[in-house]
Image 1: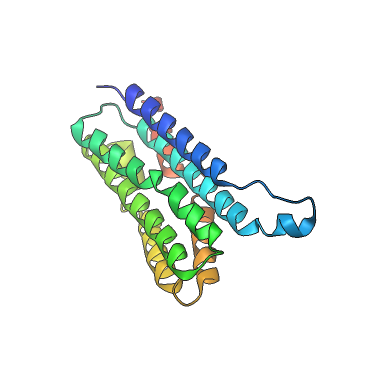
Image 2: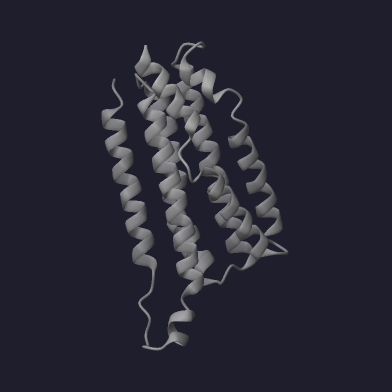
Length: 195
């Protein structure tokens, strides 16, 4: 099976996730700056989550572009990723509404960690379908960036219980690391097209 249907389904789910997140933003009930300033935690949570969903969408697109064939294990790994990403609006809303309180901030990190693990599983399933000498397998290698991200998520989750603002900063730092699409996959795609 080709990747077209899997990509279309994933794109639809990610679009719905972003829509749910924006609908969770509350309209201010007032016309002054004080009223608007009370909404900053929710808006800041939304911006970070929007960036994270965008990062996953972008890297997911690149990863599937390198995939020539989809089997059942890839489909289930993709659903596993989408499950965790579908919880981002809940975690985002809870964290923002509670002004980055420890438990909501930790739950937010747990959802990000679970989505990152799910992405690594999907990546591994796609790489398993490629020849060991494929450009994709060569470029991704041991995926140090992915493993560093997991460690930072775990540190941030632990930190959220005594210093939630530092945990939030770590989540933002991991997002900054991944903001640019994974160049390794782009190089792999370029090598494949050159063959």
